[in-house]
Amino acid sequence: MTMKKNLIDFIDISKSYDGNLVLDEFNLYVRENEFVTLLGPSGCGKTTTLRLLGGFETPDTGKILFDSVDITNLPANERKLNTVFQKYSLFPHMSIAENIAFGLKISKKSKQYIEDKIKYALKLVNLDGFEHRSVDSLSGGQQQRIAIARAIVNEPKVLLLDEPLGALDLKLRQNMQYELMRLKEELGITFLYVTHDQEEALTMSDTIVVMNQGYIQQIGTPEMIYNEPENAFVADFIGHSNIIDGTMIEDKLVEILGVKMACVDEGFGKMTPVDVVIRPEDVELVKPEDGYLTGEVTSLIFKGVHYELDVMANGYEWLVHTTQYVPVGTQVGIRVIPFNIQIMHKPESSDEKAVEIDE
Amino acid sequence: MNKWKRQLLAGPYLIWIAGFILLPLIMIVYYAFTNADGGFTLEYLAEIANENNRKALLLSVELGVVCTVVCLVLSYPLAMILNGLNIKNQSFIVFVFMLPMWMNFMLRILAWKLLLSKNGVINTALSFFGLPGIQILNTPAAVVFGMVYDFLPFMLLPIYNSMARIRKDWLEAAKDLGANNLVIFFRIIVPLTVSGIISGVVMVFVPSLTSFAISQVLGGGKVLLIGNIIEQDFMQGMQWNAGSGLSFVLMIFVLISMALMNSFDKEGEGTAIW
Image (cartoon, rainbow over all chains, first blue to last red; front, top):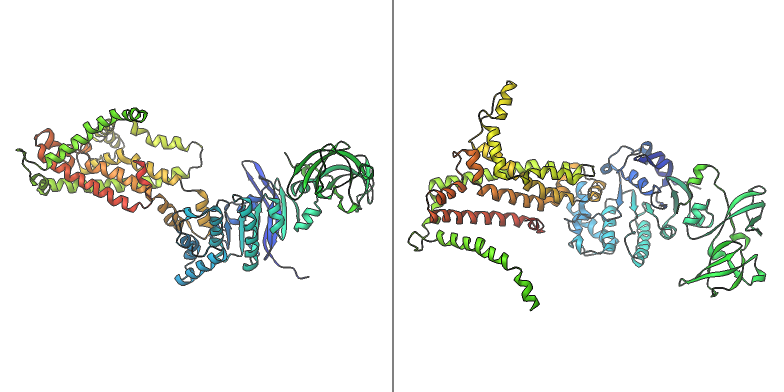
């Protein structure tokens, strides 16, 4: 297997603001032509990471390599990457064409080249003919696309995107997600994307970096992150989950809420305390006598594709997604097939405990 | 009926406008175009061509331009520094700069006369340290000095306001696209503060062009501005027609300069300030 080479390396980066540690000994690499998403709640350090790479902040310690060259102290205007800002940040006193041409004029490209580039970029973001419009006359979604066009005409090796879809409505956001994926394919450049929206991350990314409180919680493909969360934080942050205290009795057998269940995990040792993650869509509702445990439906919400139920069983409120209609008050049995029971180590050190979601 | 009653509330102000703004204006125009016998004439408008008057007008324009340029050169960097200060009480600092405006401007000018006089505080202090004294009182330099001192806040405030509206992320975006500080200054900051500059220029140039009190106190009667001549026509010579003629011409000058400035201000934001 040939490895693509690292384009960006963060090495032992620490950064604090007013004594608050935002990033602690942060290490991450990004390979060429990868769509990497930094995902986490606000304050997890994801935006700081992006701003460090963009050159708007300097780390307290550590260094950043770009194409194996140390760029830690290189000013933002000399870095070969471009940013799409959360607030679009189009220049209000310039037309759309002038906005897009801004970077090209600075690098002293020829008039013809600039004109061609503007045309090309507007076509790429599906806004042909918008050259002479003013920034104010554009909707949020259109402004965001111009911001992307303004960044990519400079042919950066990396495009940094700081929650670029955060201010758009749901429908537009979904459309833009597909547009971004298409753009990435067409341009063949690296995307480093910051978001707190797990769905967005799962849809677009090649690699997701889940962060919390300045630490990386897990790095992996969307499938890995969703199906095999490494700890309770990841499991909870990526979609809604049932996270239950359990004890690993032996290989392939776990006890939760006083019930022994078969699972597929091994190597945890005997009688080890663990966290057990069961996705709401993996909980099967059966007749009370057929279930591992029985409970009562306490709430029912229609969600379109499925119903969202709370089932009180053995002192735990289970979150269940099902297409069946089960009225509140019904006695049901709960079953989970072994493959869908995900076992995770309990956090050991106090450091790891700190990463648990605080609500 | 209700609508009528509400409109009546504007009455006092309308009377005020009619009595103290419109009527005097009409009178100035009337006097400007008539002679002592009430006959129509352009003679008094032509007075501006008279050598003394022409000189005074030119000097007024000259000092007005110098004062405006000095105010701009002082205010712009100051506004940038104030805006760049990373402190919570930014508005307090701006307030400190505005504070002198709360004192009567004649008082301040009289104070400067004392400070600048031959045996005044400044010269006493300078000679104490063995430095040569400054003798600028009763020269155009002193008049410009007084005008700058008085009108500086009118330049600073609109520029500061327009600068405060520049979002930090615009500057970051410019930097991200490869702009160095020079490019950011000329392509982003200056264009986005044009409306503030125009407001400031108008608000400083117009009063300095028409000022007569400052030149009287700090110029000691030796610096004759067009305002001083008009004042003399009215107060000493009782030549209302001549004074009105010159006032009318001066008014045209002011209107032209304002129209010129506003033509630079595409967005029309600057006019909102005054």
